Length: 178
Image 1 (cartoon, rainbow, N blue to C red):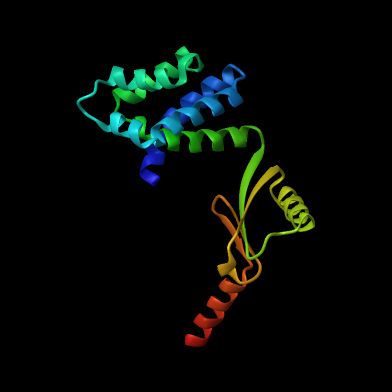
Image 2: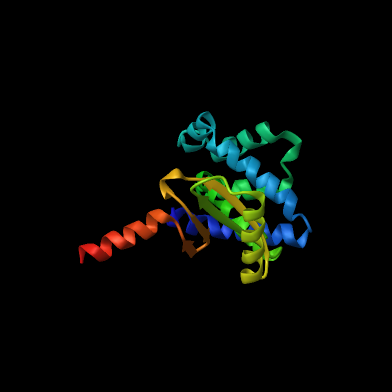
């Protein structure tokens, strides 16, 4: 995945700079998500990966699916990506673009895994603490993972706090084994 993110980064940065200059960050988010959805479709992916289909026809596939929603600027991005055989990295372009957009808008995405569904009060407390720590608006995606036994693990980029019972038991097990 790191390799595809490296490949996707220049395209995402170009799209981001263009969208920022035209005050269209949200519109480009929607557009890139739609383009990535096409790539993630199994039938479309077969066409995109088929070396016998011309690069222009691959771009036409996107144009046919999106119709009038595909701007000339987006078509140009697709053409450059097609010329370099990079259309399959569009989902990674979206990830990089969204991280650039979030940074520009001072938003941070967090992932919280919990053993049980957190209450509204627990969510509010966590989000307020993260907002204070990172001095940014926080968007937390909560997932329930019963394997944690109890507690919570929070990840923001490379920053991780794991207060789950599962991790504590694993640490205890390792300490006893030594």
